[in-house]
Image (cartoon, rainbow, N blue to C red):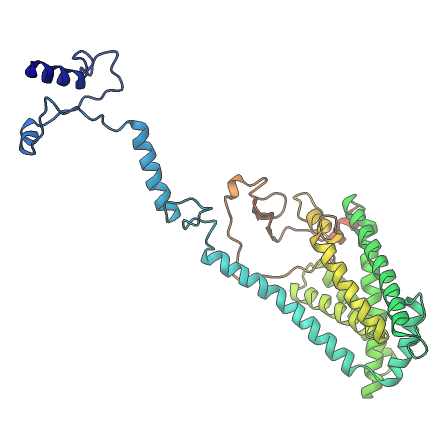
Length: 373
């Protein structure tokens, strides 16, 4: 009876004889395993009583190979979100160098503008010019007249905030007008307005700054030379900013920096209350205009980044990266429109929306388009 019970248990553990055959139609998932009887007996394994363990299936082998491949590519077995060393948790050296080069390219013109503005305000001003131009600025820009000597600080602060709010509102409205003109391709009107404003700012307001410097430092110059020099200064500035053909890019960038310094010199003639409130209001407006979804400057950048967007220099400062610095392309083949189009190419990042425009020699100036139209 004991031998019969042992034989029954052995038969229960073994599959039917016909299913153990690899060519049986009902046994596609049961692999045929060849066992070495001598090795089994050496390790004390009875081949008749030990059940056969199924061999790993093809799906398990593919899964193991995929895991090994991901470990080799990502640097770890975990997912990218779990910090397993994947691309999402680390910044490559190329991206770090590009970020440093981008910051350096923006920091240079900003630093130069601040230094030139401070030098112009301090060294190209006298007590007489400060008093005269402060009165003219108050009459031209201030809606509410300030009298700090006879008014309380609260009343003076309220009036200065109101004046700053009016000026920032006008600036924002004009920016929205520029965005609408660019969006609906009113390029002749927009370029004409930009040329007129830049020429008048460099010629008229720049002439005022130059005249104050000549009077303060008693520079010997006659009116004819002064007028011709001022005309050449303004004409070269307009050509460098808008035409750009045959002119080094640094010349146009330098004129944009000088334009900002001249405007800073003009705004320095506001009284102390209006100057500080206007500075705070302009900083808040710039943050809203650039960072908010409905900001005009953000909308202008988005419009200019499109593939079919017309070229419009002078609206934005175009920083120049050092030689060899280029944004690492992330799967450029899967990016929408990746590869370039028209007369210029770009590498587009579909995840962040960043782009780098590469100027080519075939890009036309907007003034040429107006002349041909």
